[in-house]
Each structure stands twice: as structure tokens, then as C-alpha cells.
Image 1 (tube, rainbow, N blue to C red):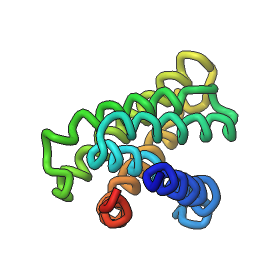
Image 2: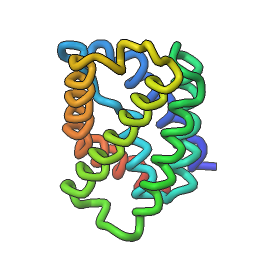
Image 3: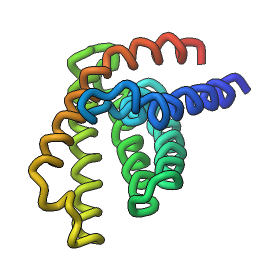
Image 4: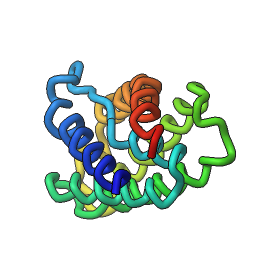
Length: 162
């Protein structure tokens, strides 16, 4: 019973971070993706199943509250949770370089997935033709990678007993 309660608390904290406090944490409209780092962290520490469940719940929540194409984030976060969970026994999850590298790759896949779905479904989308949007996404990816060691450190402490 301790694990579901802890996951629920983590869910509430990261929803607050991503959806409400992120507007105060951004610089020039660039803010990190806390949820993506959480999903990768859960995948590397607890395995694929937990990361998929967390990824789907956060993705579904984000899709419900956004005006983007429904289920895009739920699908992407679930897939990224699965793949990051498959790496849990293969690499050292305590290595900061490895953490940042995995978050960098998952951020690239996530942003590419959002970009492709947006361009395919909404063909006259500004996102598909804007160079400023590409630079902003690269900056968001770098911001996400920059917060990775801190988020991993905190979550390692919180999830230690579970």
C-alpha cells in the first residue's frame, strides 16, 4: 500500500510542477519537461511496467487539459516509459552522464513525435514551418537535460524504500 500512495503523491507534485509552477520557472518561454524526466527516472529505477503506467497517466492528464491532438502524449509517454524501463538492468542509473544521455534521447523522440503527429494531422500547422519553434524545442530539450541530475537525486531519495 505504500507504493501506490507514494506514486500518487509524486503524481500530484509533478502535476503541480509541470502544469502550474512551470509558468513561473520558465525563461523566455522555455521550460523543462519535468514529466519526461520522471518517466525516465521511474523506468531506470523501477522498471518498464511502473514507467508505462506513470507515463500513460501523465500523458492522459496532459492530453485532457491541452488543445492538442488527443492521446498523442499518452502514447508517447507510455512508449518512452517502456523503452527507458528496458534499460534498467543494462546501464548504471546512478551515472549522471547516462541519465542526461537517456533524457536527451527521450526528449528528442518526444519532440519529434509531437512534431510529426502535428504535421501529419494538422497540415497547415505553424509548428511545421517555423524555425523559431525548432529553436525553442531545442532549448526546451536542453533545459530538460539540465534539470535531470537534480530530479534523479530527489527521486532516488524518495523511492529508496519502495
